Structures are given as C-alpha cells and as structure tokens.
Length: 65
Image (tube, rainbow, N blue to C red):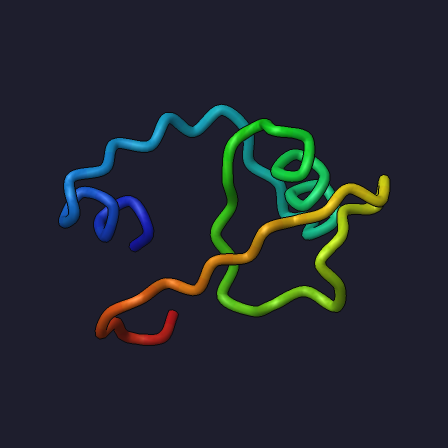
C-alpha cells in the first residue's frame, strides 16, 4: 500500500533497510539513514541513542492504514 501511494504522487523510494522494530527504525532515521513511515506516533521523539526525530504529519485526504 505504501509503495502504491508513493507511485501515485511520483515518488520512487529506494528501500535499503526494513525492520519490524520501532526503536531500530527510529535509530536509522535519527542517524540520517533515510526516513520511515509510521501509522502511530511513538512514545517519545528521540531514538534510543538520544538523537532527536523529526515527525511530519502526512497532509491531505487519505484513508487510515
């Protein structure tokens, strides 16, 4: 579903890493290894190593995942 939505708006993400662990995704993003998509906001806005995470809401009309 996410890849389809990216195609609709003309994005072609290059998926280098995937993880089922929220803390790992936060660490990768906070350390500059791309971006992540979450359907819920985490408990805090910092990765496990203390680096800040920038959360940007998805705008526009969209169906919940």
